[in-house]
Length: 396
Image (cartoon, rainbow, N blue to C red):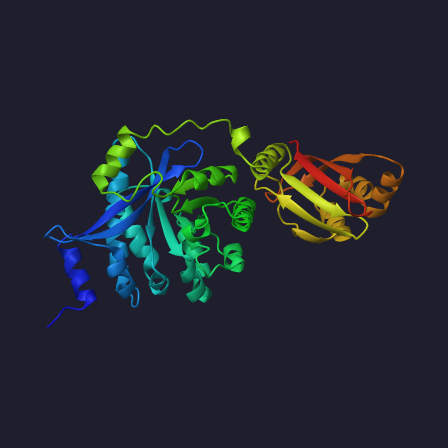
């Protein structure tokens, strides 16, 4: 009687025939190895290699694929530990199927295996496919949050493979977005393809997600991805999946990278804009865009601002009232009088370029800090609305 695929895999695990192969991830600018994805290979006792495409799809029809994932995780953790013992701290990512979402003790199993090797959780990345987000949409949010709360990194794999949903990317608290190779099929020479890719990298940066481009094979693809501020590259242009020992030698002995070149010539304007915003937020952790004519606003706030309780968008008048309530009682009148919409419009009509006030604001931690708030009047070429950009600097 022929064995089922589940029985064959269980026997293969027992015989240690399932082996983790590692495909390195390279920094897109420096060309240095910064991590790797652990992939399964079935190597029979005879030496024959059964590619994943011949057994993983069948296993994914049931939760039998889970035992493969746990097996590869165990080997990946051992590799992380070996590298650490040789002075290399490197994160490895492991694919986990959608069936794990149904495991009530998933996090307990994950912690048990990782902690057995005494490695920090941040060096293990859980990869979930985009299709898993769709099929398990009701449970996936809580599942991912639990994983990240335990200090593991989470990556959305195969983004753009056909089921892309910006809604899920927006809602899922993931750390990394992996761009599917199908989006590079035109060798980045098609204008529409380039626009789509540029848009993906732009919103990824805005969501503070790292990006990994999968399946990169040509210099044309690499050159374009570098201009888009793609963070990491994974593909045959650098390396194929390889056995542990070969990977270890590559990381330790040959991780020299390449000439990064002049970043000012490499990056596209979107990359320069990202650097500019990073510099702005070093000084001003809160930036507010307001349309005084239409009484609206939206804000960009970084974690190091004193208070983050205000809605990120809404009615400008309500924003000023909310801000006034957070000020020290002695400073509330000056804040309200300086920044209420009527007085700002009057200042604009008088030809002023900006309005500034220094007040004491109550932070989320219950401490008052001195904050310098400056409203700069700006002009959009397409409309006559009065617009402002507000920069807030915590001074104490």
